[in-house]
Amino acid sequence: QAFREETERFVDSVLREDRSVLALLEADYTFLNERLAKHYGIPGIYGSRMRRVTLPDNSQRGGLLRHGSILAVTSYATRTSPVRRGKWVLDNIYGAPPPPPLPNVPALDETSVSAALPMRERLDAHRTNPVCASCHRTIDPVGFALENFDAVGRWRDHEGDNGPIDVSGGLPGVGELDGVAGLEAGLMSRPELFAGTMTEKLLTFALGRGIGYYDAPAIRKIVREAEPDGYRFVSLILGIVKSVPFQMRAST
Image 1 (cartoon, rainbow, N blue to C red):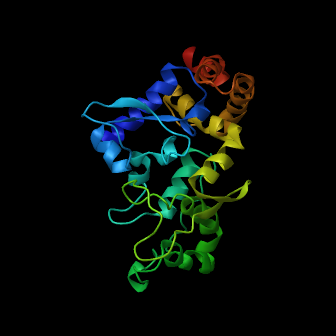
Image 2 (spheres, one colour):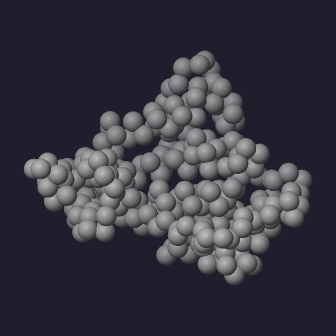
Image 3 (cartoon, helix red, strand yellow):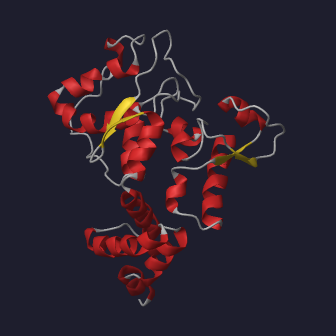
């Protein structure tokens, strides 16, 4: 419940304050109550009421990629999943969804891999199997950057009895990066991609249908015209209302 409320209130604040959509990725505040603050290891928060909390510069919390809701839903019950997390980021943030798994390719047999090994080593089979390698060489490095967060979103520096977690990763078109801060910086270096992804989702809602290839020119135009305004939500919404797909829908 607190996970969901944190994210709902955070997104609502960005919308109500008409901030840039990029504020969803990098923020110096979040919403916490005592229970969630303890879970995150943040002192000085008391009571069950959720409230806005300004975070220090070195905080492990902030934007969506640091929210327990996102980190937990992209994990398994007992362990993290760099694959799920990487795919989620590529799908929902970067606008570069990986292709679906090839048919008739069996899932990785985790029983044949020691659970004591670091997650990166356990997933080596993805990148050594030529059938899987082409996609997992793109997906896995994105997820590895989030490995400082465990399956329920708590910060960790070590995985079990192993040494320090290796959070080096990479992002297509950006290159190598390190940890969640590096991933956020990589995503922010291509702001038009996240703005485009948000525009697609908003346009889908506005049209009441899925987005087709024929909508791509309108989406590019909306994003291009919103850039001078810093990709504020109001700029994207106004662009959608003025767009050809929305106008054609409104007139029928």
